[in-house]
Length: 381
Image (cartoon, rainbow, N blue to C red; front, top):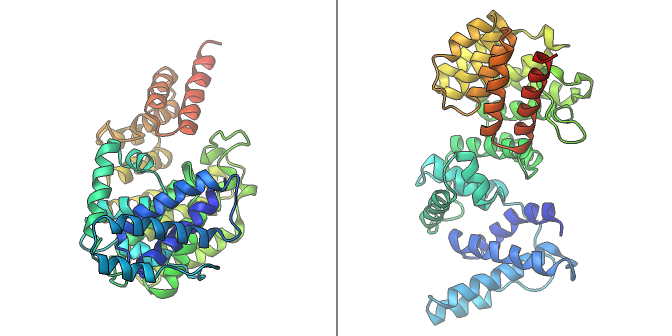
């Protein structure tokens, strides 16, 4: 079963259903039913036209559901519109679906959750994990969002800022999670830059390209994480870095700074350093100051504490960290790192072990566990 193929076809099939008259909530439900059927049938009987197969099955599932609660005349009209056999039209509705899911009638958090579920192909459990809420809570949030947009026309625009936030989160899930969506997020952001002339759209594309350029060096062949300072920079994609920097410079020249441009500037400074020791940490701290001003985000301030620890020494980094809530995700891991740099290996080892228990994914947990073991072994020799 080609899960990647199924995920790639989902947005365009969903768009076809909506354009044919299905409301969004019913179309998404029918699409999920069709995906379940594909998982059951395709391993033994793969279709010649996977997209057309999904359209047909999903539309029939929609009709079955509609027959249960819709008047006879409406049912007959829909039945007459059933897609004819043959290849489905090659229309990419993914970006339009992002805007539909980002409709102003939804709160930003609900819009992001709905898009990740309906268009990004993430499971409710994955989304709940990203938001640090119970799966049942996230399921209710997504259901409410689907009901809210059920009557929204397919051509009604959503909120650009929310679309950018969704694309960024989908990219991050693809970059570090179980489902590879990073390339798709980059493709859609490129589409967005072609239709919307805004420096923050360009800033997001630059940020994605600069992060994606380091992807090959981020893990070992067995999947272990490689910290930025230890990555083989010869494996970085220099063409993507050059493109990202060029896009960023053009966006910054418009003097309309936003958070994605600021994040991209930080990524560009990392990419520009020939070695980890040559990183311009002072300028990175300045960009984190700008980013904190723009977002007032505790996660940004957590990352800033790391940069301060590099620019002004670990004691300064620990002082910056002390102003933050220690319940923040990765707070313990940052504290461990700064204590290690300050020479307190016993405290660092203990904190690395604690951070491993709180890690959001297996790769990060294994990395932190190895860090703790490394320091403990050094202390006992």
